[in-house]
Image (cartoon, rainbow, N blue to C red; front, side, top):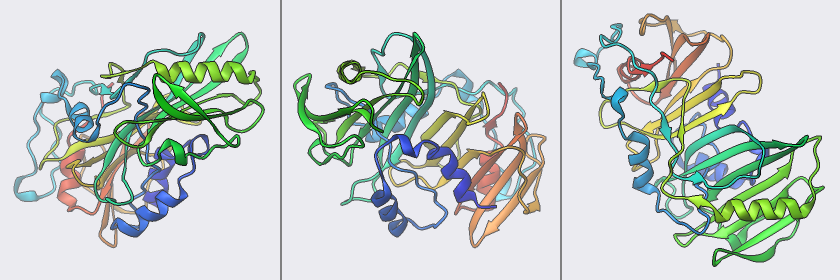
Length: 350
């Protein structure tokens, strides 16, 4: 079983909807120690004319403990495996806070497909993480369906932006210079990059969904207005499919992905864990279907059977039938005992 594909399926489920990242992925693979790290394309926080320096701030937002997060679970003694389920009553999974909110969307019925906070890096400092977020959603009104993608491209300046629809032209949004392009019948719809005072740019894409149409001017007006009304600090809270209690050994939730599965009405959830000051190295990922790896049976976790796989030092712990019949996979180049410790801190109740 290839853990890289499982992780990528979650973090890159809609790669075709956003700017190309082949060069970024190639650089990541050259520099990060693990061919299975599954780095997705960098996501970023849409900034409009309001700006926020995300680095440490995002890490704080992601790890701010609510009442449900304070339940403590003892780590395995002497670093050994632990099959003991939590002794406290399992709380519901705590909400995940986005670092910004969308202050305006086109009129209609809004369906969110993706909420993300993920991690990228700059070319000159590939080991220093840059955190950001992304919204992907649809808006339906009068039989018309618009697709919206809002994110910050912290590694791409507006003057170096590339478009799916064709060449861009200069525009100013709330006093910030940018570049936009719109071909309503093309693959990109309306695309906008606005310069971010802290570096990089904010990206907004508004497009007619397949089978729907929209005039170019409607897409332009919607995209510009979305960019003008991004709000900091964020007040949007996302409900994950499962959660994590307070983590051991200084680990933090550095990034998350909560998105609609292609055939599952419930939201898939993935986390990236680490110190958040260097690239996070532990993945926690909800699997696909009831697939069971060919690994060795492990110690039970919270009453669930497990499988353990060691692929040349890249360790995977599968907690079977963890949420709605699908497994949760915890993976990284860390000791086996650390994977069990994290597994026993999963919040599986809804």
